Image 1 (spheres, rainbow, N blue to C red):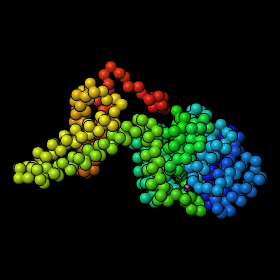
Image 2 (cartoon, helix red, strand yellow):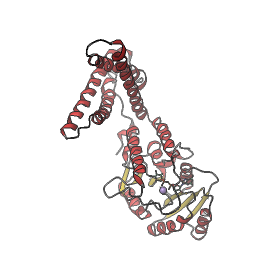
Image 3 (tube, protein in one colour):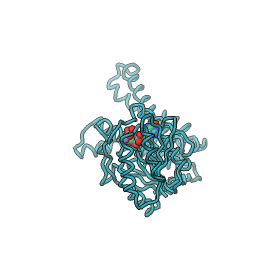
Length: 375
Ligand code: GDD
Ligand code: MN
């Protein structure tokens, strides 16, 4: 059985049309609809009226607020072996529920995500360039920092289906943000995730509840989720150390050119490699004592250091090659090209350091089980 969970906060005008469309879409299925309602308007009465007539509809009214806790309360109340979550405002078309169910059954998926970002899908109802770029930026950030989120092109989706088994670890938790799908991908029992395309519709009535505060909550949620799995924490620390390295590099460069090397001819040309190498040493110090501290062996210090230096120089080369390639493609935007190069180099050097620099001799580093069995 499918338990469809619909969180509602002041969605009065949407309840009835939503109920009709869901009932039609699921007419061939066994299902229940659980409205988890925190409304302070007539929404509650509207749902109660439908629940009185249709035994498949349940109302869970709460006197608190919070989208995440509402969804998790819904998981707790669900009786089906499958659960799905959907907004009440008809931005999520109920008509694709059968496709989602079919995808789950045919491909034995733990999670099915309707995606706006694959062929056949569209982010249509994300109104305006600002919301759209926030959504894409948030997605890029999630993909960069949480490897589990890479299982889908739309990890911020509020619409998804999962096995009840997969959501069990979430029961009773109180996530910092409202992106439940991210929470599920990182904390849930999820091996296989599949996608189906869909078009995100315009909000049909009443207002969006998610304002600016949600952006801040989102960042807090990401930081929180990063700490769940060591691989994500490690990459985050590496990026953080790299950021401080850039600051060290720039500060030393400025100091040398404006003060210490004053009067020296071509001071900048001399200052640049000094500053870069100082930054490499600085990064090595922190990456060894923090980022890969579990892999550090004092007997291997010089080996770690030499390899780290080689990897860092490889990073410089990679950045330069990216710059070269972008220019050859006619994309000559100097600073932007350099930034793209740096991004590629960060990913590459992370991997090289993880697989080579900090590999303890005679030991093999075990792949974490979940990433090995992924997809
Ligand atoms: N029970 C309950 N309690 N429901 C809530 C609350 C609350 O405090 N706040 C919002 N909801 C319900 C709304 O009634 C709606 O059904 C759903 O949660 C999503 O709220 P919207 O206000 O429509 O959010 P949105 O359209 O800005 O964001 C949606 O799309 C995003 C993707 O762009 C959500 O689905 C997000 O989760 C999703 O990331
Ligand atoms: Mn919405």
